[in-house]
Length: 486
Image (cartoon, rainbow, N blue to C red):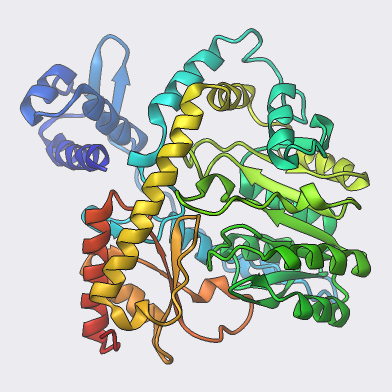
């Protein structure tokens, strides 16, 4: 966080000083900039890289950095109004929406301004990421024989075998040949939905659910049909009704530490989900995104749905990203039967393969002693941060903390019910003005939400002190809007 702020500050300073130099004139050396601004050489290098990317500075190896030549005038405006028709028009009778709404995803990916506390993110704070272990793994991977060659389109064998053991469990229900390596979980989820459902088809989803999945479904021309949840996960009685009413052949769920509720699918409902899907002749896409984010003191984790699947109904999606870094885009798809061939074909058409150095680095990481240490560390840290945020809610927003707040045994967020009639957009805007970024609940629903909510992340803040301050700032925003919190 501090390094990113230093880079941004130095880039602003250098940008403001450029008018002192003529086009082509040399800027002070990196050593001089380090001494003048009292920052590290890395900060200088990154700040200059920003100016190079903006076309303001050019660098010459061995010579230094120079002010770039004057840029030509802005390009002539183009009339693109015709695109509104071209992007929306379809064949007669086509009912598949063609627009793509990524607002719910972008809301959790946006990096807040300096000084704003991040309680809306979906990734671990840099303090929790295994940066040294990742750097060491990437260095070792780069020295592996053939590391820069073309990998198999399905993924390298070692990584597929590791994922097969992780997904299938001790029963060994999966073979490496049942696994495809993907470029993260979102890519795997996209491939799964496209492989199983045709454009225009209904797809059953938990309500509420992950906005990124809703965006993928709609971008693929699918029609999300919500199935309500309670504290034990999706309501399987309503799931059976939804299959009958909609004719859907696909249900997407997160059985473990569901996003956003944090719920864990109850044991008896696990069996019911598989039974109901079999009777409907339908697939179940299991998004197991948070298995490695279990908290200290949590009960033993249930196996994956795929480990209990005897009919090839489950398509399993998982990744290493949530437990490591947003830039380690390595995940897996697991399936059995003809659907695996379709998944493979979609992946080849979309991206050919995941870069081999990234796969080799993942193998090095999960095979090192640092991996187990890292998982133990985040297990304890996430539990501590969850408890700190819960305590802060009870102190500053007791009315919200006592409205049936569920304390999850894993994951990275709390799902907070707001008073009826609360304007989520006004609250998220007011919170941002107060210096804290939060996520409103509306994007998590496929249809009209039954009540207003917030999703508060305790993994994206820098520590318990920042969580306390973030909740205090949220209280300020609630008070300004007259939202009852006491």
